[in-house]
Amino acid sequence: MDRYDIAIIGSGPAGLSAALNAKIRNKSFILFGTRNLSSKVQRAPKINNYLGFPNSTGSKLGEAFREHISSMGIEITEERINNVYSMGEYFTLMANDKMYEAKSIILATGVEFSKPLKGELEFLGKGVGYCATCDAPLYKGKTVCIISSNEEGEHEANYVSELASKVYYIPLYKGNYKLNDSIELVEDKPTEIVGESKVSKLLFKSREIEADGVFLLKDAISPSQLVPGLQEEEGHIKVDRLMKTNLKGCFAAGDCVGKPYQYIKAAGEGNIASLSAVSYLDGK
Image 1 (spheres, rainbow, N blue to C red):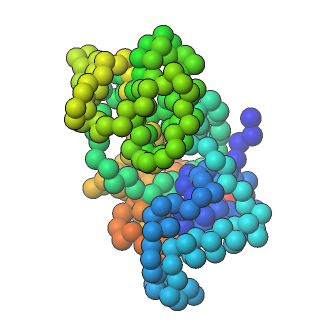
Image 2 (image 1 turned 60 degrees about the horizontal axis):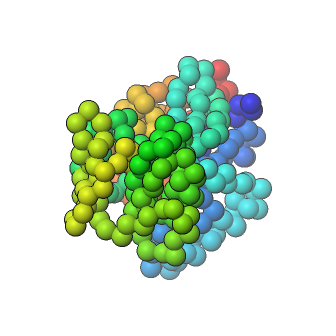
């Protein structure tokens, strides 16, 4: 298995800026994210505070970002990282059925604005999970509910349906759902996960479903859930001015480290985080 110098998680302004500097400094790196503009960028109607781009919009700025990284030959690996583990001298990154290794990591995951579903944290690891394809073998012949914030969840639901006896799909978005015939679509709002020692039911406004497992596929998850041992402060990753976290070789930048949630601030922090990672690697 190849071990990269730097793994960058997130393809917003912070992650892209970090990738640019890793490329310039001739480090081997992998950038995880999506090639599509985030809804946050797409919805920005007017941007006046990004130096060099007067009277811009989110979509125009995002397109400039993509043109820039394309001109540098930077590719985005469209894999969702579900867990990151510090192994001492390197990090292991888990992405569904794949595993990656890197000597350092830069977290540029953005911020998750939604509150946890009632019972979510209580039953985490006891029937609640964030990666359906990772844990699908544990639910062979069982009943599973999949709550998804985006259409990527449809792919995971289809995979799980090949193993589980019953899959319920609960989308938190509107779309033309591409689901296997065996999957039951539930267009109702989930309100609570209940059980005793483990998950037993998922409650909705107008019904309840008995289930052995509930997967919540979010646009982003809490950094401390992504990277065990990571120190947080007021809901954000705690970093110093060099974007260092409390974990050796782990850096963070952008919205995930705190306000203000500004593109120009995120891009600058991505630059600093990348330079700090390079300095860390060169000093080893």
